[in-house]
Amino acid sequence: MQDCDVIVIGSGIGGLTAAGLLARYGKRVMCLESHTIAGGAAHSFRRRGFEFDSGPSFYCGLTEQESLNPVKQVLDILGESLEAVRYDPLGHYHFPEASFPVYSNPERYRHEVLKITPQGGREFQQFEKRLLALYEAMKAIPTIALRSDWQLIPVLLGRYLPSVWKMIPHLPIVQGSVGDVMDATIQDSWVRRLIDLECFLLSGLKAHGTIAPEVAFMLGERSRAGVEYPVGGSAAIINALVQGLVRWGGKLLLGCHVEQILLEQRKVVGVRLRSGDILKAPIVISNATIWDTYTKLLRPEDLPASYRQAALNTKAVDSFIHLHLGIKASGLENLTGHHVVVHDGDQDITVPGNTCMISIPTVWDATLAPEGHHVVHAYTLEPCAGWQRNNEYEEKKKQKAQSLYRALERIIPDIRDRLVLELIGTPLTHAHYLRRYQGTYGPAIPAGKGMFPSTHTPIPGLYRVGDSTMPGIGVPAVAASGILCANSLVSSKEMAKLLKSYSY
Image (cartoon, rainbow, N blue to C red; front, side):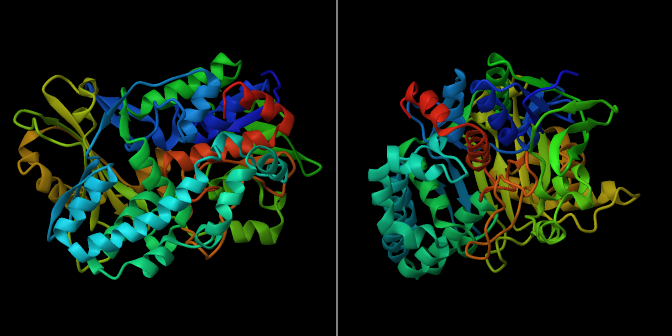
């Protein structure tokens, strides 16, 4: 194999974003993917004519002209674009005591909350006002212009000084949690539960564990840009990133498993593949999780012992049980695409099986299923502990999937009679196909209880991207990690030259 400037291990959105951007900067980039499908946790797969998203299904700002979505910003730089369907309401939340539509439009959203709790609705307006003020200060600094080294300071002071000044009054919120803002503005117990749910869907943690800027950005973008679904599903995003990578001279190799990151004199020199081949490069970027990078791709002696142990002690978000269903669509003409069902209001929303997320993407893109059918994706938290591929495995899968079926019956009462195809995924499925530690979606680091590990590592030439490097388990966070990493590997002059031509 030919040598290159940068090797990226893994083709998740973080890895593809870093690879594509570096290729655009003129670097010789090779992205190596162990799976036969690109996309990592965002890949799509096909069974019997049904196209399933394996992970994310909720997007903002994929098509607007000057989007704040990091994915859209990178696609602009790479010369790629997407087609998407906009919709509102973005979905429905189903609590035991009430169901209500969740609108992107903030006035309509508040109106629905006011119907349930007038006091809570008024309090929610104050909560939202504080976070949207932070969003207004943040939005003038595009993610594509950021980097994760000291050169960020002259970039901010030179190009975005007015926006930096706007941020100063909001620094207490920037450094705090959503829970801090909630405590200062909201007493209503139902609205507090609603905010916990919104945070959980976004970060995997409730309000006191979620950083305020994350929710400020979500609320702001939801109301400003609206919600949309890419035609072709999440695969359309992955395909666009891959096309952009190839357009600028980068390469993607599928079914190419990296066995080890190679060091000489404690510096990165390349990787060894399972095939035995060695590919050399002075820079390696790992899109694997922090746990997989430090235990499977490196030897224990490659890292300082205390640093390695601290990294491996990072708590992980639980994995999930997934239902991927193909169903008959007759009589379901008024279906909406997103639903969240909370079974028991007396139980914590983070209890496995209690909060169930549902996506029906064929509401927006009928081509994802055979004519007259829908694709359904439902999932709920499930710890990896206790799962084994033994004689009880299949029965345990069916038993654990029952909470998802009960949630689906809130939306489609005769769902079981409509089944054409059923696939049940477990934490072991995640761990196997996505090569992710315990099938997790990333670290569970509560706000104020520690910093997320950055893209940098103690090993010269080794960097990391993905959900182990940025708060939040969503697409914007992992794309942002790829941007920060790639920009940190070029000079600020190279960055300025590229961004100037795209008005960022």
